[in-house]
Image 1 (cartoon, rainbow, N blue to C red):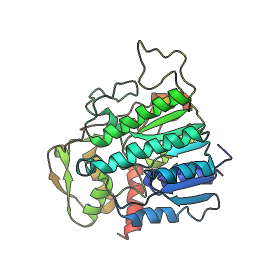
Image 2: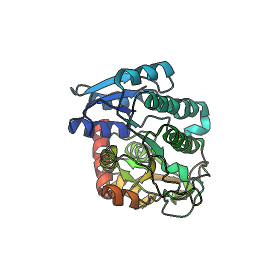
Image 3: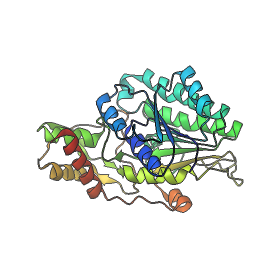
Length: 338
């Protein structure tokens, strides 16, 4: 871990909070940025920020990724040796309604991150991608060695674009970069636009829950502490470039450039109806279920191949869905006084 200042973008976000807490607990100095936008209730972001803002090794800047001058000044001030880029405009369904938000944050904002790294001596950029890049792929488990040229939502397309942009900068400027394809991360301080949170709120209020594809969905639910642990290990696992990589048979997950892609998932997809049952048990109420057809941009199942993580950093997720949902429900009941 670096003794210098490390940047975490999206520090008031769900994964950003948990990673920042882990970094601070390890003695790392962290500079956090977040624009605290209203895509979902900013009060939740501020409550997360309250957990870390008084820590002596933490400094917060409210800043938008698309603010080119502001981002340039931030990088010039701190010259971060390591950047963990988690901020983005999230959400598959919202991208159908507000595509320009994704261009501003996920494309223009990502260019500002890359330029900051390029001009200020960054030694490792870790950035959030998404399992959604697998798009129309049906072979499971999803492997980082699979082609991912068929995204089925704008959100997924911007995340695929991030991987490509990062590779080009890594190739041109030899900056080590690691892309992280997250699979349905959940846990305490969860995002309220995500299914488990929406279900928990509806069940607790006695309202119906919408189950798309008639409830026949499987997701590789990944507990947030497992995600933070993987990221902590990857901070110092700096890509070197693969000397055996060949353009004749290109491996999509690596390169001659110091660039790598990893899946971060639980490696065990769960039936959505089972997860609903766990929520019902934790909340002490039965859900009223509304079965609906598949939503545009959605996929019926996700399943992560995490063999690369196990082989290279000795990591496999440890949290059972029963334990993770129990911890999420405990937080949800406390936060909402249910």
